[in-house]
Length: 251
Image (tube, rainbow, N blue to C red; front, side, top):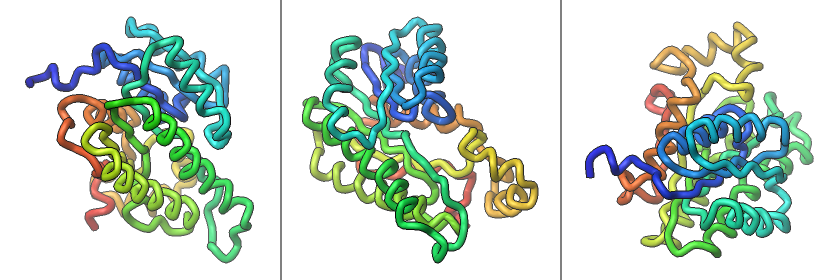
């Protein structure tokens, strides 16, 4: 196969949570690998900026504004993206939220439900519609190292990402061999999502003590793994959780 196996030429990718952070970098990396890309998010202004970066690679972009928890709107989203770019080959479920940090005894039920709805149900709604529409393809669920180990004081996020890993395995078995389904589990990455913990020196230092690599990842490093999982180089990889955490889960 050679390096051509990593090409996404002629493919169409949908990336939820594609307006910033890891999702934005995945969208751009897939365009650089040859795919036309539809970045999906709730923020229209940020989506346009991502679309500009995609188009600067020479590929087509179809930004789409939606809340992934609106299951009724997912079908229309796929129809509109297909009309703009063609049949979708790759779905990246990256949209997520994590507004709670603290003792689980202080967690309110509304926050618990919101995190699970965005991180788990939103990903499922998109995957389900994708699975209904394609004969072959690839789903990448962006989970977290919190999907394979416990993240202290982040119970709902940890629970949601463990659920996403379980959903990945279940769909991979059901949809094989035609649709590959894998999870990508980043550790701590330098994005807006982790700005709070990076700006608190005590928390930042405590986290670094758990990372053998002694640093947070750059979002581009995670995006490169997503390109691999979407490509023919990973044609025999399904039902797996690719952890990229600087060694956190190994300790």
